[in-house]
Length: 211
Image (cartoon, rainbow, N blue to C red; front, side):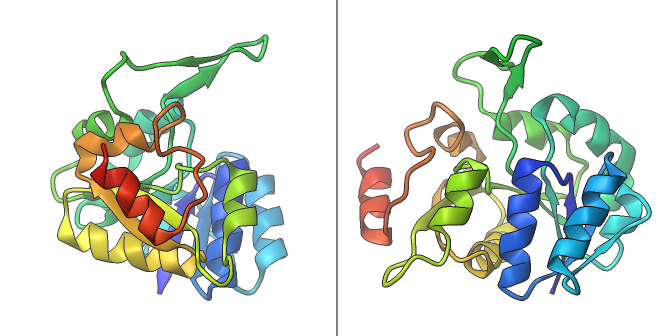
């Protein structure tokens, strides 16, 4: 199977490495072409660098938009016609950092990134919020845990997206657990009650049930 990853920053690179280690074929694209080339060389032959974002989507079963939330809408607008019918996986947290390194939320309290992103996507795109539930370092260190895999939570309203994101989560070395529909994606974000947790399936389902 082939997945496009647009964005090869810290999180996008971590996602790419874990998917590649699980056998996924990747098509990479980034505004920082040097970063994409270095990542592709690191995980070769699992990945190739696409000419641009649209090219990355060609032949891909799903796309991970591993981008800062503040640039996400602009990229979606540029490739909207290519996203129809695709499974679109978004890990972005609704945060920004100022020149002094201060982190702040860019959405009103109570509004989840998933609800906003769903409104940005074209008709026919199948959205799942996933892979942003852990920081990049924790994501890599917690993968392929033994004897019981750690859980990676996700949220979606679409059955096709559910099937594909569960496959990708397993490929990355985790057990997928659905927290609910897109309206529940705020629980996965930084500051949400399910963010940066390393738990097994039984505890994960207990946490969801107790919400």
